[in-house]
Length: 339
Ligand SMILES: [Zn+2]
Ligand SMILES: [Zn+2]
Image 1 (cartoon, rainbow, N blue to C red):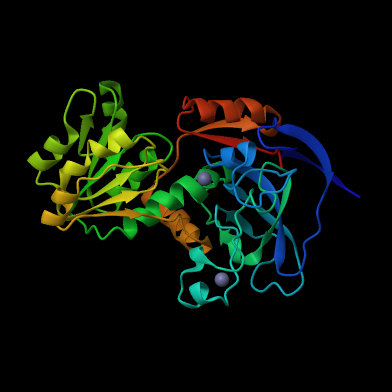
Image 2 (cartoon, rainbow, N blue to C red):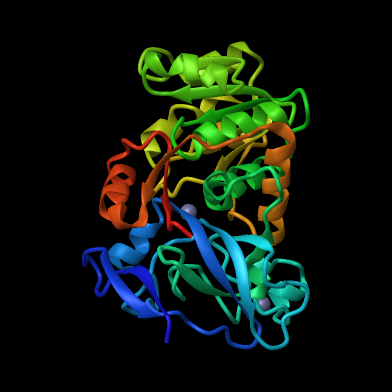
């Protein structure tokens, strides 16, 4: 049997081990992808540290996968060897449960598949995935460019396009890291008046280069007051995991404004009186399914949105993971397989 290199975690909290495995064969309804690049996402810590119900070890992390289909299982429609594809967080859905029948594929009740968590992910030279999880990668995006867009990209793109904001609206983006630097670009390219809010004056030139009309340093300014001076934000997308930072911007919402959450904050304090007097809401946003990823990739080609990446070969996975965890990566860490 032919072998491949993969990076696995053998137990919760265990190290990232580079191992040799047999190249897996596609089962019915799945495709095999020769992985070219895989982003390192903060959510990979779920696989590394444990905590997802039913997570079994050993497990290969990675849900920002870009590569080429090299084999298809029985019964697979549409996808063929040679097609460039990607896979994100959503690892597939059944298509027949009530949630799926209502079009809420992300909330599938029967097969809660998450790439790199319920099945082996993209820190490997090959991956097997359900065909429902597969998004086509357009010409014009390299594997390294495509990979981070399959989680960080689609999450922010899909959140913004479903936020209710219309072209010309004021849209605040809280945070300027892996998610935030993409959200600012998407917001600007979608025709919103994008306002970047983060900590530290030194980030302003980058925020403006990415398309922000204005930048507020939350350490030196009151971001809620600054947003209100501009008329109030229709939408604020929070990409941070800090409840206090979110509390500091929520006063910047306009009437009927919405705070959209894409960063996993453990708990959040909201101002109910302000919210009821001004009909405001707080809403969580699920990343997206494969067709949302495909839309995000196509929009990125069309509009020139790109992730800023640090690239590491697979054997330097520990270093890449550490860069991501420390928050020092500018802005996404991406593994390449040499495939
Ligand atoms: Zn992710
Ligand atoms: Zn379902």
